Image (cartoon, rainbow over all chains, first blue to last red):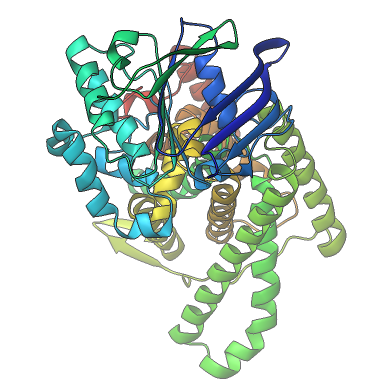
Length: 232
Length: 309
């Protein structure tokens, strides 16, 4: 069976700065992986390299067997829509919020495939079921929501299409412990049917016991599996 | 000073400047490009409308006679030719000044230079092809005056104001309700979030350039009811549009509308004050813009926005 994500020899950075050093990493079908490590050690850069948003990168990245990496030194973001359409959904750090759109419009932005666009109402309902506080905010401007609500919108936007690989960057960052726990809870309550999730997180306690395995990241290198933590 | 006449004049100027400024503002906020070739789109649309209307004149005269039907048919033809030529210019700008360099470093400055070059080259091509003589577009709103609310206004002023309202209303409605409009607004608010939502910048930029080009084309037809079409006729609307877009806070559509209304009335008032007159119009408006930008460097836009990041 082909892996959802296969990374080999990935090196990436910004300008003269090299952030990732020769990273190899695999995520299987339906797997839930926690990517842990301190601030500034490259978790976000790894996600951004997978979505072709870093300044430059080299090395092989295969999404469902299709090469999306390669060597690139300019045009960050140019290939991103194609990668997203190939089956990757990312909820970035800082939430990539459209402040002047309503919650409903914001979610619609995520429904980019023709099928998802046609049934966007049903999919919005699905997101509201996962994040109930959003339902009564449907027509509120995203720029006026609280941090926790924005995070829900950002993750919800990534859930509007059926991606195969979800990259969720720091779901607990800047949130009150109770709210971050509910966001994580909602993420793990999703039906697993073949979709793989990688969650970057500093707060290991939030993930332990819930992910299939954890991978540590230190100074731009992966530090092997931190330990196999079973789901049940 | 005749206040009603000044009012009508100011509003019609505001309408045309608004069309130009919104085009520039929209393009800057969605694809990050200051389009110095906006004036070229303006001039090309004027010439295209002139050429087509000259060719169609005998045909229409034979078909409709000199009555209102002929004028209406000519108006439709002129406006649609202007919009189409402007949109075609927009597509050309997309191909030459956006597509090859949009993902290179320092795109805003590079595209500024490329579009400026495109503007100069287009003016020279028009000069070489059509010659320096000014052309006269058909009067699409007819000639004459009418009293509205006790204000005596020329047909072309009323036509300009009404059609601008209609055009801008349609554009803003399209941005609100259509899927492409949603993608454009998403791109205006957060380009990185947009690409992560699968919105391709390359395929969203084409409708933006064509739409803003069409707006410039319509502005050209409307302004050519009072001035002539010439190779350099796009320069003044470009400068006015750009400064009004800056005054409104680059990227803010409501700001651009407000700026256009203020500058339109300011010009009309300065031109009508006896001891100032037309000579001081440019001086006065630029002085005003400079003062506003000194006090509020971000322009008027931030005052109107509903939500900030």
